Length: 478
Image (cartoon, rainbow, N blue to C red; front, side, top):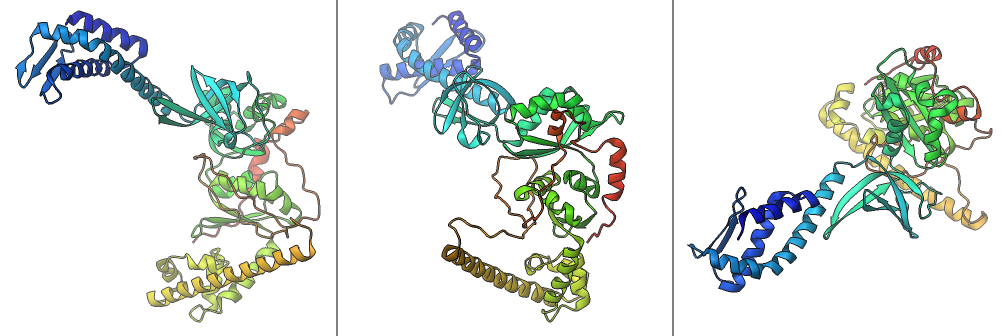
């Protein structure tokens, strides 16, 4: 076989299809080997190799070299087989190349054109690749038509036969991050950094930003003059509200910023439980919690801690009731109960997860007594859970008997569990808030600037210093 001709074919396929030359050489070797097996028999010990520098083909049968004349015949016989083998190899190599390329571009922003719309999935074409935008990854309420331009991030890439399947998302929090990088020059140039982000697609996002240049207000720079910069992002997200707040490494300062526009009186840290108690005035309670718990839920995701919002009166009542409940355990003295409550242990469920060595450090009790306390707390927590289930079932039966179908009794639970920052997309369970008798105040967000008002997505530098100094008057650490 002609060595230079083999090299020319390999180089042409490598350049056209962007396939590794080694894969092409292996495909040709496999094609010649297949033809040789048909000629010499399947049981023959055949070895075929191609010199990577000269293109010269060599073959052996049971250790004996096959003459050049027979190789030429095999080459002609192998032509059709080689064609099929190379087509398969090229398809597999193209798939692997695309898979590697788009795997590296996960969470990156792409712009494509809608080519097909089905009930459950929208097909988007970009870079000659057909990607899928499932209904579950679209912003709630939005719809697409054939020919629409769509911006999304690459959520997942996986192999499917000889092709790859690219899944897009418009619900993932990283879409907001990428839009900030594209639309705001300071973020693109890394002068302003998006430190944390939480999102409920189609409704609201919170973005915490910081700046390496103290002369630049990161919040104002992101909003732009009269909201000119943030407006494009809001329109891209189908009118989704965006709160931009100033990042701070100190949690007692960051948490009041994250709960804006509500005014926070005090922040109490409970590091053993990984939660924070935030005290607000009665008139700020509904604003801090937000509609269906949305504001406190997003703030919790933003800072990475559970946040429990309450008034000072509610906290005092909770302290008294918790101390009284803990005192029913024989091994728990009143002083120890007060100490535990001061660390944020308000329920038997909280107490049941405490590490015995931590309890021993706080109380000075023996390991056996600490184990007994934790075991008793687990029993009480289980009993309370069963009682809660019974009450829930009774309430449902009462509603079915006397109320309208679908009526729900409002819950008073305000603790919102925190979730990891900008991860794989997870649906949050709706959290109901306490009944509010007065209408919820309008929040000052980046959206306000679109109505001609001054940017109010964050606290200006002068006002922030005052809010930061008053944001954490008391920190209780374990």
